[in-house]
Amino acid sequence: MDEVIRVQNLSFAYKQDYEVLKNISLVFDKKSTAIIGQNGAGKTTFVKLLKGLLKPTSGEIYIKGYNTKEVSTAFLSKYIGLVFQNPNDQIFKNTVLEEVMFGPLNILKDKKQAQENAIKALEMVGLQDKMHIHPYDLGLSDRKLVSIASIVSMDPDIIILDEPTIAQDHKGNTIIKNVIKELKEKGKLVITITHDMDFVAEIFERTIVLNEGIILLDGNTREVFSQQEILKKAYLELPHVAQLAKKLGIKQTLLTEQELINFLKHNKLNN
Amino acid sequence: MVNLVVEHLKYRYPLGNELALEDISFEVKKGEFIGIIGENGSGKSTLCQAIVGLVPNFYKGAYGGKVLVKEIEVAQSDVSEISSYVGIVFQNPFTQITGSKLTVYEEVAFGLENLGIPREEMIKRIEESLKLLRLFEYRHFNPFELSGGQMQRLAIASVIAMKPDILVLDEPTSQLDPQGSEEVFQAIQDLAKNGMTIIIAEHKIEKIASYADKIILLHKGKLVDFDTPEKIFSREDIEEYGIVPPVYTRICKSLNVKNEAGFYPVTLEQVYYELVKVYG
Image 1 (cartoon, each protein chain N blue to C red):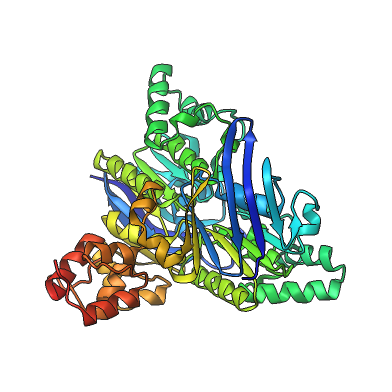
Image 2 (cartoon, helix red, strand yellow):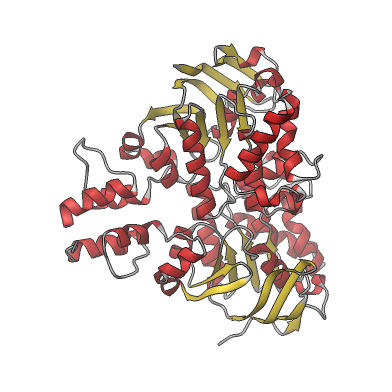
């Protein structure tokens, strides 16, 4: 297994005596991974720790072997990129192109290469025609795509997306799904926080359920969605297809439309 | 009783080349739950802003037609004047938080103070809406200490506390976990049952399918259709407008399963009922 991130006995508290994350240990390889859980479960805090923006209260995090406590966040940014939940927290330049060039320019120190990376990233999210627009003249959904492109352009091995599908319509969702698939094909580790269970079922190989600062479930996505009782405890829903399959009394965990359609074509319901 | 009338509404943003809204007309009755759907750029947010009068009173630009809230023409009135009749929850909760209040409790009080609500009534409403949105235990927190989802619930709570006749919500559950968004939809449905008119722009198509009485389908600033979820999602051309019907409807389309009225089912209960009839 290609170990990309190792988390060892990680605990974190913003305020003394109020632990947001409690003794978490796990390893990430290159499998695309979804992190799900209720609001306030500690998902965003967890990825900020991976990125080195926060440092563990106790325990260690190794990003490609580097302990986040021992190296600077600037150093880590070559290896790990985080797209914030709110794009407004991230965007500060006057044009989309400058915004997306900012990261690679700082890492590569080569303007031509930085611009090339930026344009490629903008093409990936379908914003190549909006390069010279002020980011704040774009709608929230496009601004979110700008924030994704700004991280992709830095070409880190690990890319974390914090709720990427917020404000996206069907077209935007398709773009984001394709970006994730493309990054995966390039051998990147993609970690995504999301509340969209259909998106999780369709795209991610591995799913981690965070609940009140601990890992409640961790495994391949189908296995995780078969643990209905535990998911209920974390107040999580099943993907829509799995909800329907369950209501129809189907024992298997079906995750996609096509799986359910095929099942109905070849089996009789017994209820 | 009709309490919102939109008549031949047209609007262009100050620097826009095209109309953001083009000849939109519809009527909504008291207590109706209306969903607005359409791809990004179709005019959903602009329509929301026009219902509360921010378009054209704040955003300016070229405006034609009328929006009447309880027979008051919003373009002719002050935003503050109509704010007791109609409230809006913005798309991005970070925009809604005033930034001038130090606690969640005071944040919810802000709108009420501006409406001049008596103190006792204010306390009652603040506590009710904080409890409704599961924020009561965070009442002493600074709003900026909240998580994204909690902040979004706070934005909703502060508008609900003002008890507008018409509540407009622009993607109010985008940052909420599944249970949180279900709770918000249920809370809004209860408000509708008690007579509040709900207008909600939303991408969560399954939620709109199960909660909305009627749906406004927008495309490039035009109103394509205004009808029940079954009829809207059964349209053969729906995907041309950038809308993918609920997963349950898609499954039924693939299997060619329709209900007695000849439409595809749109909710979990409906699809279950139809599938059991065919495959049970």
